[in-house]
Amino acid sequence: MDENVNISLKLFIEYLQIEKNYSQYTIEHYQKDIREFFMFMSEQSLKCLEEVEYVDVRIYLTKLYEQGYARKTVARKISCLRSFYKLLLREGRVEENPFSLASIPKGEKKLPQFFYEEEIAQLFDVCEINTPLGQRNKALLELLYATGIRVGECAKIVLKDLDMDVSIVLIHGKGNKERYIPFGSFAHDSLTMYMNDGRKALLSKGDAHHHLFVNHRGGPLTERGIRGILDKMIEKSSLSGKIHPHMIRHSFATHMMANGADIRTVQELLGHAFLSSTQVYTHVTNEYLRKSYMNHHPRA
Image (tube, rainbow, N blue to C red; front, side, top):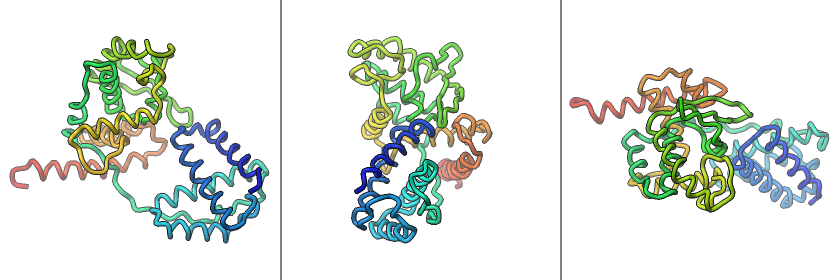
């Protein structure tokens, strides 16, 4: 295959990192999607990106469906490739975008999954605070649940972003947008213990730096590392079913609205650019209240 194909991919990755400020986790998914399309090009004897036409896109879509991919996954792959070609068109590396006419299948609207309050309590119960790593994990979980921040945003926090006197953290979100989020006494106490004890013990094993959360070697804790910690917490708890770390963010929003927070406040705390992204929690909250009613009302 033409060497320009790999050069174009490198250009796109730099665009996602610098211009779009996407997380490494998202970039890895985009890179995987594009490399899979490169394999398809080889199978179809397409040597360069300029040779791809709309008919090839239709063949690729058919192949994805035959492989059993969910509609949401297919939509993500096509959206990624459309953005890829859009950049190449902007940079003059291709003359047209064959994905511009490809219709992205609409996925089923599913309500975000969340933990009930008693389930969140089970996660906190598995946290040990008699070791440096245990203190870190407890502080990590407390802060995520107290603020509803994304895992990627959590990994970026440095010590100067925290104002412990007023319990506020500065979050660097998507698109270089910043927002301040308050956190409660539980998170404050766990963070204080971790920073005064556990973090110092872990830093003694590595180079000094200003990241809030550190790994077992004393280096900055990555987004992937945080996901791994949360996965292990969930495994240690008695929770079952399909669970992912992002459910902590969904739980934060659901519990806030169930307890009377207005939607605009939740939107600002979550860092949503559009209110429509936050409105889904209105439906989640209704279901949450319905189940609580059915479980607790004596004549439900």
